Image (cartoon, rainbow, N blue to C red; front, side):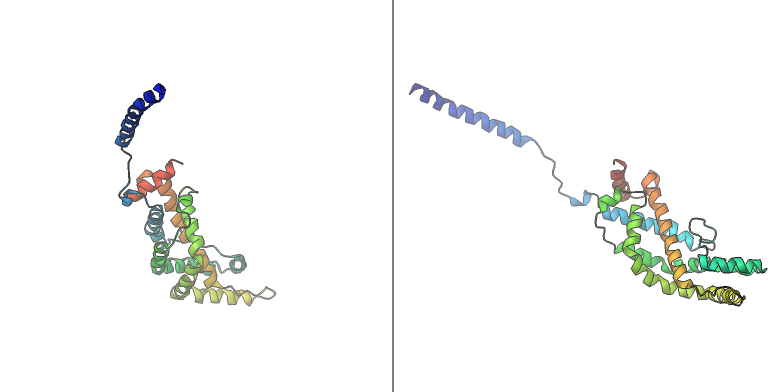
Length: 240
Protein backbone atom coordinates (compact mmCIF):
# COMPACT_ATOMS: atom_id res chain seq x y z
CA UNK A 1 0.00 0.00 0.00
CA UNK A 2 2.85 2.40 0.86
CA UNK A 3 4.45 1.66 -2.53
CA UNK A 4 1.27 2.59 -4.36
CA UNK A 5 1.00 5.86 -2.42
CA UNK A 6 4.64 6.71 -3.22
CA UNK A 7 4.08 6.01 -6.94
CA UNK A 8 0.99 8.18 -6.97
CA UNK A 9 3.00 11.01 -5.46
CA UNK A 10 5.54 10.79 -8.33
CA UNK A 11 2.98 10.72 -11.18
CA UNK A 12 2.35 14.51 -11.15
CA UNK A 13 6.13 15.11 -11.12
CA UNK A 14 6.71 12.82 -14.14
CA UNK A 15 3.76 14.35 -15.96
CA UNK A 16 5.02 17.86 -15.33
CA UNK A 17 8.48 16.88 -16.62
CA UNK A 18 6.96 15.48 -19.82
CA UNK A 19 4.88 18.61 -20.28
CA UNK A 20 7.98 20.78 -19.87
CA UNK A 21 9.82 18.62 -22.42
CA UNK A 22 6.91 18.93 -24.84
CA UNK A 23 6.90 22.69 -24.40
CA UNK A 24 10.61 22.79 -25.28
CA UNK A 25 9.97 20.73 -28.42
CA UNK A 26 7.17 23.04 -29.46
CA UNK A 27 9.51 26.02 -29.09
CA UNK A 28 11.67 24.64 -31.94
CA UNK A 29 10.77 26.54 -35.11
CA UNK A 30 10.33 24.32 -38.14
CA UNK A 31 10.76 26.27 -41.39
CA UNK A 32 7.56 26.34 -43.41
CA UNK A 33 7.39 27.46 -47.03
CA UNK A 34 4.35 29.66 -47.27
CA UNK A 35 5.20 31.24 -50.61
CA UNK A 36 5.26 28.56 -53.32
CA UNK A 37 6.54 31.14 -55.77
CA UNK A 38 10.04 30.81 -54.32
CA UNK A 39 10.24 27.14 -55.31
CA UNK A 40 12.13 26.99 -58.63
CA UNK A 41 9.89 25.98 -61.55
CA UNK A 42 12.04 23.55 -63.51
CA UNK A 43 9.69 23.46 -66.51
CA UNK A 44 9.68 27.25 -66.74
CA UNK A 45 13.47 27.31 -66.50
CA UNK A 46 13.89 24.78 -69.29
CA UNK A 47 11.46 26.70 -71.48
CA UNK A 48 13.40 29.90 -70.89
CA UNK A 49 16.62 28.15 -71.87
CA UNK A 50 15.03 26.88 -75.09
CA UNK A 51 13.59 30.31 -75.86
CA UNK A 52 17.05 31.79 -75.39
CA UNK A 53 18.31 29.29 -77.92
CA UNK A 54 15.75 30.50 -80.44
CA UNK A 55 16.39 34.18 -79.69
CA UNK A 56 20.19 34.07 -79.59
CA UNK A 57 21.13 31.22 -81.91
CA UNK A 58 18.30 30.47 -84.35
CA UNK A 59 18.10 34.15 -85.26
CA UNK A 60 21.62 33.82 -86.67
CA UNK A 61 20.31 31.37 -89.25
CA UNK A 62 18.05 34.00 -90.79
CA UNK A 63 20.96 36.14 -92.00
CA UNK A 64 22.44 35.65 -95.45
CA UNK A 65 24.84 32.69 -95.24
CA UNK A 66 23.33 31.79 -91.85
CA UNK A 67 23.10 28.23 -93.12
CA UNK A 68 25.43 28.32 -96.10
CA UNK A 69 28.55 29.39 -94.19
CA UNK A 70 27.78 27.68 -90.90
CA UNK A 71 29.40 24.25 -90.88
CA UNK A 72 27.17 23.13 -88.02
CA UNK A 73 24.00 23.42 -90.08
CA UNK A 74 24.95 23.86 -93.74
CA UNK A 75 22.61 21.88 -95.96
CA UNK A 76 24.58 19.50 -98.12
CA UNK A 77 23.21 17.42 -100.97
CA UNK A 78 21.55 14.05 -100.41
CA UNK A 79 23.06 11.04 -102.19
CA UNK A 80 20.65 11.31 -105.12
CA UNK A 81 21.57 14.94 -105.80
CA UNK A 82 25.29 14.35 -105.24
CA UNK A 83 25.21 12.27 -108.41
CA UNK A 84 23.64 15.18 -110.26
CA UNK A 85 26.17 17.64 -108.82
CA UNK A 86 29.20 15.49 -109.65
CA UNK A 87 28.03 14.76 -113.18
CA UNK A 88 27.26 18.39 -114.01
CA UNK A 89 30.65 19.50 -112.69
CA UNK A 90 32.34 16.91 -114.88
CA UNK A 91 30.52 18.44 -117.85
CA UNK A 92 31.80 21.93 -117.05
CA UNK A 93 28.72 23.17 -115.22
CA UNK A 94 30.33 23.84 -111.84
CA UNK A 95 28.86 27.32 -111.51
CA UNK A 96 25.34 25.95 -111.95
CA UNK A 97 26.03 23.22 -109.38
CA UNK A 98 27.40 25.78 -106.92
CA UNK A 99 24.34 27.97 -107.38
CA UNK A 100 22.02 25.01 -106.82
CA UNK A 101 23.62 24.15 -103.48
CA UNK A 102 23.64 27.77 -102.35
CA UNK A 103 19.95 28.22 -103.15
CA UNK A 104 18.93 25.26 -100.98
CA UNK A 105 20.60 27.01 -98.06
CA UNK A 106 19.08 30.36 -99.06
CA UNK A 107 15.64 28.79 -98.93
CA UNK A 108 16.33 27.55 -95.40
CA UNK A 109 17.53 30.98 -94.29
CA UNK A 110 14.44 32.63 -95.73
CA UNK A 111 12.01 30.11 -94.24
CA UNK A 112 13.45 30.36 -90.72
CA UNK A 113 12.65 34.10 -90.72
CA UNK A 114 8.97 33.23 -91.06
CA UNK A 115 9.12 30.11 -88.91
CA UNK A 116 10.67 31.53 -85.75
CA UNK A 117 7.26 32.24 -84.12
CA UNK A 118 6.29 28.61 -84.80
CA UNK A 119 9.22 27.39 -82.73
CA UNK A 120 8.50 29.93 -79.98
CA UNK A 121 4.89 28.69 -79.76
CA UNK A 122 6.07 25.08 -79.69
CA UNK A 123 8.22 25.81 -76.64
CA UNK A 124 5.47 27.81 -74.94
CA UNK A 125 2.90 25.03 -75.33
CA UNK A 126 5.23 22.14 -74.52
CA UNK A 127 4.60 20.01 -71.45
CA UNK A 128 7.58 18.28 -69.86
CA UNK A 129 6.77 14.78 -68.60
CA UNK A 130 9.74 14.76 -66.23
CA UNK A 131 11.41 18.15 -66.09
CA UNK A 132 13.84 17.17 -63.33
CA UNK A 133 15.18 14.21 -65.31
CA UNK A 134 15.70 16.46 -68.32
CA UNK A 135 17.42 19.10 -66.20
CA UNK A 136 19.81 16.52 -64.78
CA UNK A 137 20.36 14.89 -68.18
CA UNK A 138 22.80 15.47 -71.03
CA UNK A 139 23.88 18.89 -72.26
CA UNK A 140 21.19 18.88 -74.97
CA UNK A 141 18.43 16.97 -73.14
CA UNK A 142 15.88 19.78 -73.25
CA UNK A 143 16.48 20.39 -76.96
CA UNK A 144 16.19 16.67 -77.70
CA UNK A 145 12.91 16.56 -75.79
CA UNK A 146 11.64 19.56 -77.79
CA UNK A 147 12.61 17.86 -81.05
CA UNK A 148 10.90 14.58 -80.19
CA UNK A 149 7.79 16.23 -78.79
CA UNK A 150 7.19 18.74 -81.56
CA UNK A 151 8.82 17.59 -84.82
CA UNK A 152 5.70 16.13 -86.45
CA UNK A 153 3.57 19.20 -85.79
CA UNK A 154 6.41 21.56 -86.70
CA UNK A 155 7.02 19.77 -89.98
CA UNK A 156 3.40 20.29 -91.04
CA UNK A 157 3.63 24.02 -90.29
CA UNK A 158 7.14 24.48 -91.60
CA UNK A 159 6.89 22.58 -94.90
CA UNK A 160 4.69 25.16 -96.69
CA UNK A 161 7.13 27.89 -95.69
CA UNK A 162 9.99 25.94 -97.23
CA UNK A 163 7.98 25.44 -100.42
CA UNK A 164 7.37 29.20 -100.63
CA UNK A 165 11.03 29.97 -99.91
CA UNK A 166 12.32 27.52 -102.54
CA UNK A 167 10.22 29.34 -105.09
CA UNK A 168 11.10 32.78 -103.72
CA UNK A 169 14.87 32.29 -104.03
CA UNK A 170 14.50 30.60 -107.44
CA UNK A 171 15.78 27.26 -106.15
CA UNK A 172 12.95 25.30 -107.80
CA UNK A 173 13.78 26.75 -111.22
CA UNK A 174 17.54 26.21 -110.94
CA UNK A 175 17.19 22.67 -109.64
CA UNK A 176 14.60 21.95 -112.30
CA UNK A 177 17.18 22.93 -114.95
CA UNK A 178 19.91 20.89 -113.26
CA UNK A 179 17.80 17.76 -112.97
CA UNK A 180 16.53 18.07 -116.53
CA UNK A 181 20.09 18.39 -117.83
CA UNK A 182 21.16 15.37 -115.77
CA UNK A 183 18.19 13.24 -116.83
CA UNK A 184 18.90 14.04 -120.47
CA UNK A 185 22.34 12.41 -120.26
CA UNK A 186 22.28 8.98 -121.94
CA UNK A 187 22.34 5.90 -119.69
CA UNK A 188 22.03 7.75 -116.35
CA UNK A 189 19.39 6.64 -113.90
CA UNK A 190 16.71 9.32 -113.84
CA UNK A 191 16.20 11.23 -110.58
CA UNK A 192 13.18 13.07 -109.21
CA UNK A 193 14.07 14.29 -105.71
CA UNK A 194 11.57 15.79 -103.30
CA UNK A 195 13.40 19.01 -102.54
CA UNK A 196 10.70 20.41 -100.27
CA UNK A 197 10.75 17.39 -97.95
CA UNK A 198 14.55 17.23 -97.85
CA UNK A 199 15.13 20.92 -97.21
CA UNK A 200 12.33 21.02 -94.60
CA UNK A 201 13.91 18.21 -92.60
CA UNK A 202 17.44 19.59 -92.93
CA UNK A 203 16.33 23.08 -91.91
CA UNK A 204 14.57 21.75 -88.82
CA UNK A 205 17.69 19.80 -87.89
CA UNK A 206 19.65 23.03 -88.16
CA UNK A 207 17.22 24.89 -85.92
CA UNK A 208 17.37 22.23 -83.22
CA UNK A 209 21.15 22.09 -83.46
CA UNK A 210 21.43 25.82 -82.80
CA UNK A 211 19.00 25.63 -79.87
CA UNK A 212 21.22 22.89 -78.44
CA UNK A 213 24.24 25.21 -78.74
CA UNK A 214 22.57 27.71 -76.41
CA UNK A 215 21.31 25.03 -74.02
CA UNK A 216 24.87 23.74 -73.61
CA UNK A 217 26.13 27.28 -73.05
CA UNK A 218 23.59 27.84 -70.26
CA UNK A 219 24.48 24.52 -68.66
CA UNK A 220 28.24 25.12 -68.57
CA UNK A 221 28.63 28.90 -68.43
CA UNK A 222 27.31 30.77 -65.39
CA UNK A 223 27.37 34.06 -67.30
CA UNK A 224 24.90 32.67 -69.83
CA UNK A 225 22.29 32.34 -67.10
CA UNK A 226 20.88 35.77 -67.61
CA UNK A 227 17.86 35.62 -65.30
CA UNK A 228 17.21 34.64 -61.67
CA UNK A 229 15.13 31.70 -62.88
CA UNK A 230 17.92 30.29 -65.04
CA UNK A 231 20.38 30.80 -62.21
CA UNK A 232 18.26 28.95 -59.67
CA UNK A 233 17.26 26.11 -61.99
CA UNK A 234 20.67 25.31 -63.42
CA UNK A 235 22.32 25.67 -60.03
CA UNK A 236 20.40 22.48 -59.19
CA UNK A 237 22.05 20.81 -62.18
CA UNK A 238 25.50 21.96 -61.05
CA UNK A 239 25.14 19.98 -57.83
CA UNK A 240 24.42 16.63 -59.48
